[in-house]
Amino acid sequence: MPRREFNLLLDWILFVAALMTFSTGLVLLLCFHMGHGALTISALGQSKLFWFNLHRLSAAVMTTGAVTHVGLHWRAFRGTLTNVVTRRRRRPINSELTMYTALFIAALTGFVAWLVLEGSSPLFGPAFIGRASSTRHPWIDTHHTASLLSFLLIVHHVGHRWRFMVRRARPGAVARKDAKREPK
Image (cartoon, rainbow, N blue to C red; front, side, top):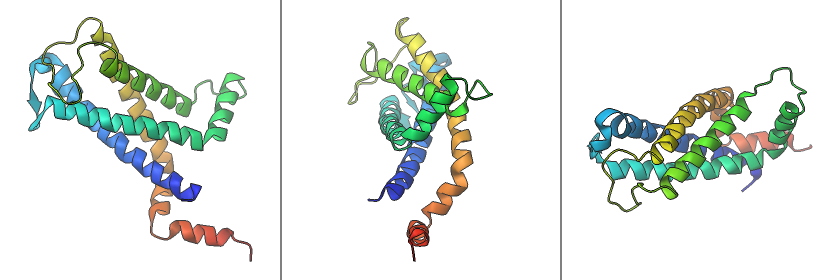
């Protein structure tokens, strides 16, 4: 698969995975974390374990896709990072670097809460019912905060590229663009 087509496919996979990750994370936050939600066993007709697993698996796809996305755009990413570190830019804050930093923190704290700390529900169950321990709770709160920030920045990031993504997703769009670039 040509790089251009792979990049477009990856963009759409990331878009769908981000929507799934955010929506399931919102269900987990509002239905199972806040208030008396820790004692709830189901929400919206599905079990707590279902929501956990859908969130975890879509987050794993999103994290893998984001790492691949940065790898595909490494030169631009490195240039932006270099400009910010060496202070060549007038604005000290870059929304893309902030987005990737928040996404990294969200992924790290999420995976630590899932795979390292005690009290996480195993992938095949059972789902633990009850409040998070004093060790686990700050990790989950940091995960929620970083996730909400990264979601806002991802909306901004995709918003600037939306028309391009849609235009490129039309059947034959990549082939037409490549045909225009061929020397005659």
